[in-house]
Length: 277
Image (cartoon, rainbow, N blue to C red; front, side, top):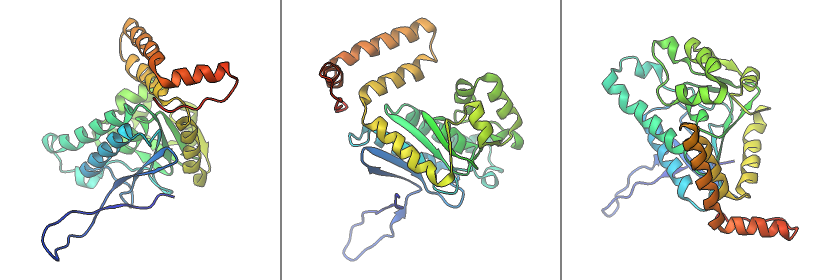
């Protein structure tokens, strides 16, 4: 189990001290898997600081060689309830824009991480929290999880990616139903829609996500990253451009150590040992 982390602030002057600053999003790395932990109790509300720290964590897992796969987790009780309606009720377009933009930018970075990213969802996963989950490759959810984009009920709409990612995931009509109604979706229905990929008992969600991430971490992560780029980027381009991107990425993998290792292992009837290079 990951522990809550603090970040010390450096100071100058003999005998001076500054209290440590508790992070709301932190990264824990073990056995090739990085857990990005949302830790903003009690509801893991998404605000400007959470968005900024999520952005930093996503950048870090992208560049760290010891992170070969990623799990995003909100803890045993709740993934994220999204934005704080009470705080947002008096916002104007100008004052809300930095918050929405910060989360949107963080999720662009998270979605583009060239490694497998799994959202481990316990409890409520709504609004901005659901948008975080949508930026992952896979979503593992507890049997009691609730997902949805309730923004329309407050006279607004999602702004950090749901209207773009959800239709690509579950189809335009199903996404419109959820976004237009703002209704919460129980875990079983979410599975049927394709909004989540696996249902598990609550205590098993995070361990199962770690186990799955660890399997991907043992694979050829350069090839996985290339395939992810082809799927995510190519799907938004005209068909011929997507095919050209796929072809270029596939050819480029023949200059990697993992390609040599994978094919030599097959020819030698032995398991491959991929290095991520």
